[in-house]
Image (cartoon, rainbow over all chains, first blue to last red; front, side, top):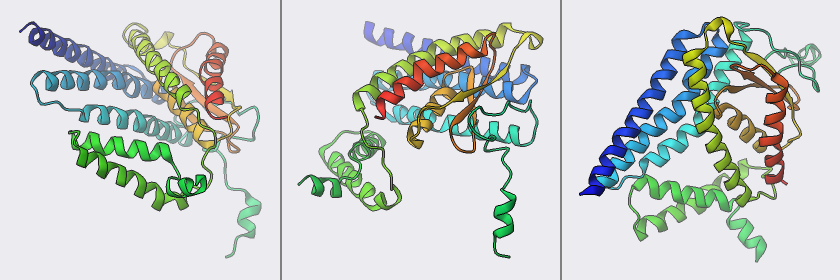
Length: 127
Length: 166
């Protein structure tokens, strides 16, 4: 019976921590005033927030005897896809000049988002 | 013999990953599901091998595991730091910055992992790659010393990734 009690408390604790991090992400999204800084709060704090909510779901499923490991899959898919969406939002911000223009790279000509098609190439292209 | 194995299993790690994902999707570990997962894990890389022309050679799996653990720990620590910044720093005193990281990594897979790591660790977002792929543009939420952040990313993550992809 003690194990049952510990699992219940662990579930509640994970839910609380997860909800706390998610709400911090929402506060950050509303508080910041620049598109790039605004991108930071929800994409990052969200990973741990949702991770804790999924951990709570997993502990609860183990406790109630219906073992579920889908949460591990959800977490790994989330960790793989979250950087890609953040990357694309950042690229859109740079492309629309809605943030400070970044400094030029040290080794190459320009950033790939700001690079315009080579005029020589387009002249050679078949019409 | 080695060539036959290479022909049948072009990506042994992908095979393993697909089998594990299949078993997890079924949510029950039975011998039938494991066998079916292994069949899928052999079939899918075999059919799609044409679209994977340059697979990185020499991938150190053991080092990748320790790298993942370091990244997970960093995500936890940095999450608390970012939450603190969000809750206590007023907008006027926030110092966001662009950071240019010259890359020593050359394999696309390694650069992808580095960019994903930078985005997942809170406080930094990898925003763009230079047109030749030799520099990475990173946006930092709040920093007093942009050079220190660049050096930390280079020593903490890039050097380890150089060891993983040899």
